[in-house]
Amino acid sequence: MFKKKFVKFFFLFLILLSIIAYVYFNFFKNYKSKLIEKESDSLINNSNIIKNVEYITIDKNGNEYLIKAEKGEIDFSNPNIIFLTKVYTLIKLTDSNEITIFSDFGKYNSTNYDTIFSKNVIINYLDNKITGEYLDFSLERNSMIISKDVIYTNMKNILKAEVIEMNIKTKDTKIFMHEKKKKVNIRNKN
Image 1 (tube, helix red, strand yellow):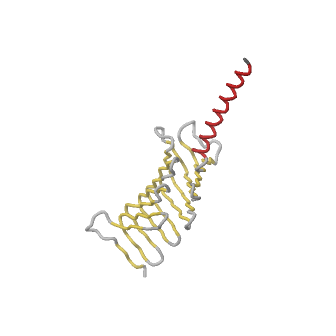
Image 2: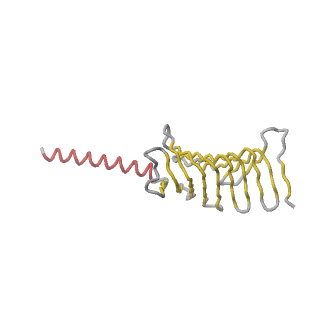
Image 3: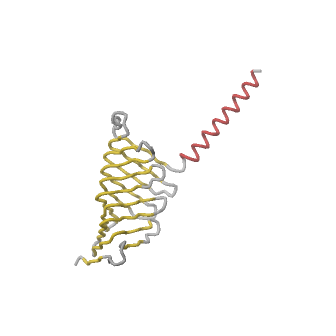
């Protein structure tokens, strides 16, 4: 009788261990993502607000994505969404130079790492600077779309447009206006 119970317990234990291993390797091993809280009391009064939030993500291709904010607020209806204030982002792509992004606000999805930046968005890449009011950044789609009062500057030119779309991987870029009557404005700095 004792052997039968022991065998059943052993098989149940193996099944449970297999389930845990399956979940770990299929859901947690593919992406390394962690929330680093700088202060032990960073959660304020058991609310959904976090001070000095920092996420570090490395995707399966080796791209590193660091996002910091003065404050984060977890969405009660979807805990994977965090609303950020005073955002700084550093993106290290495996086959490219670093990109930094600053904005007043952000909406970060901790599941797929997509981030929407808004208000006073500044993107720096090499000697290029792009400013605007709205940026939709997605590692999953390999896209970066900045819109609303977009100004692109480099050492030689200043460009004004309504939208700049960029494929992060191929660097293919589209610059355009919403209305066909309006033209993209390019001016030489000299």
